[in-house]
Image (tube, rainbow, N blue to C red; front, side, top):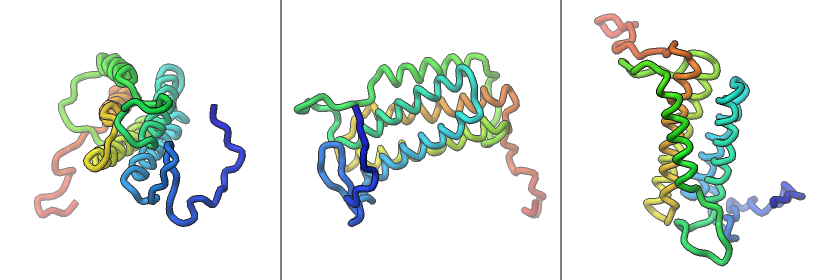
Length: 192
């Protein structure tokens, strides 16, 4: 169980922070960048939840908890090997749940015949914002994995999450996708 009695510790005033294994790293390290970007995606999903009810909100609540699991996974270096005590790692089951939800949402949507612009309903616009932050978190995790051991399921989860949020945005637009129009209405001289 987590217990936080003191929030301001002054431990990070010198530009370093502690990881879950107690080691200290610079606040601008690749690992902290990945953890922070996962946190940004989670915050965007929190904003999205202000515009959802019922099934979508329950899915998003589970995803927010998954993202905390993912942050815990990233804050302990290593790719999931045995440790003195078991570490929380993102699992294949969490990825499979995202895939099943994505498939169920997509089954009721018409096929796309154009790229989709971020927008539509307020809920869909927030889903698109969360999607872009999930993609950025994925890029940060991939960059981290190029230098240090990372649980590969964490990267796979972020990849699935961005797809999930894209399909959710379409479902929240209820068939009213904002479609890309090549050229965007620009005149032949290049002026809009």
